[in-house]
Image (cartoon, rainbow, N blue to C red; front, side, top):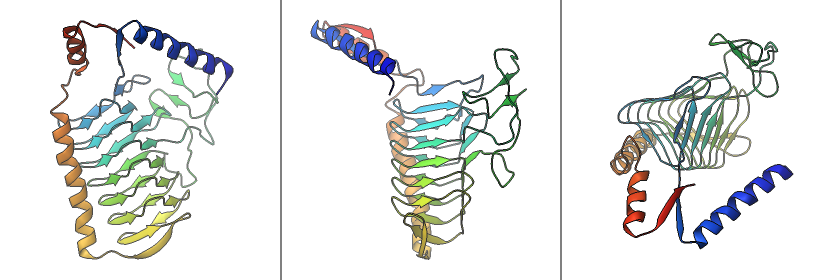
Length: 264
């Protein structure tokens, strides 16, 4: 962290402490969904995005999917992310796309309003289309999460494909170009190296990943049952939050107690 960031953070925290000492309460203005470069995250009416989650840019959340507390789904490199039907991204997980392209053209977004590049000048998006290819496979570096798939708490997914009916354990890492086929269980803490293919029907674990055994019918059915259970839980959480947000309820509660509140 740079000196500037340290000083800025210190000033913010000192200001908040002084306000609290004066009897003022601070409520958050965090935005669970954020538009990035005119890409608006898409969600259906029964998608649950937790109030402390961050869904940014070209992200599609399909029916009954859920993004849980402190999870980050960040599509800001010009390539999309898809979360499938009844799938879930659990607490503190990070789902993103690779941020640089091997054969991308250099472009200055300040000179050309139709183009955009990241801080390194790579990963250029021009006229809504990707310029250059990132992955060695020749496929675009999108991140795809299939249907009835669970992404465990603290896991990290980068420009990979995870098919339907997959249970990714807590604190797993799946790197760019990797492909996890359907009906697979990854044990907690597993690391899938770049461009690794995990075939269907097995239990895998370790760093690097190793085959542990075949899945029986019961284990395969358990993957869907787990995803459906998270979906039911998401509905229970969703009824506590309004589409326009519930921050104002907290504000009204503070005002009823005679406290002065400001946005933090």
